[in-house]
Length: 174
Ligand SMILES: [Cu+2]
Image 1 (cartoon, rainbow, N blue to C red):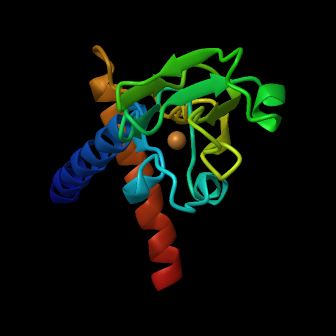
Image 2: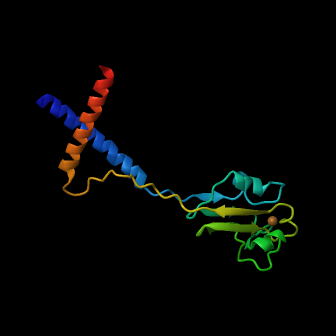
Image 3: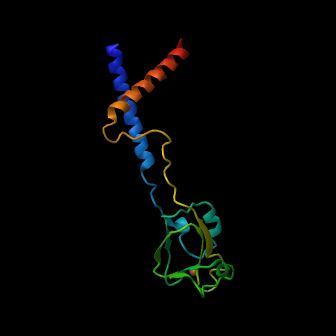
C-alpha cells in the first residue's frame, strides 16, 4: 500500500502541475493585436475591396488599427455612419495623415473610416468595422488555485481524484 501511496502522490503532483499550467494559460490575458488595414495591400486605391477585407478580420477592444499609406496621396478619416454613406469627411470625428497611423479600438460598436482625397472614398477607400468586446479568459468553474497553506488538502483531494479515476478505469478494464 505504501508503494501504491507513493506512486499516487507522484501522479497527483503531475496532475497538479498540469492543473496549474492549465489555469495559468486560462488566466493569461488575450494579446491585443495590431491589425494592418488592408493587410499586404495596406491603405491605397487600386480596386482593393476593404469591405471584403473586413469580413475576414475580427476586431476587439484593445486591438489597434494600423493605416499604412502614402501620405501625399491618401489620408484617414473616422466619420459617422451618415457621413460614411455620403463619403463626406467634412465633420470627421478624427483625422490622420502621417502615413503610419495607429487607431486604438477603445470601445465596442461600429466605426467608419474613409479617405478624403479626390473620389477615393466612392472608389472604394472606405470601410466599416464592428468592434467586439475583448475576449476575457473563462474562470475555471470549481477548481480552486493552490494559493496559501491549502496544498496538503488539495494534494489529498487530487490523490482521491486519482484513486477514483483508477477505480473507474479498473472497472472498465476488468
Ligand atoms: Cu486615398
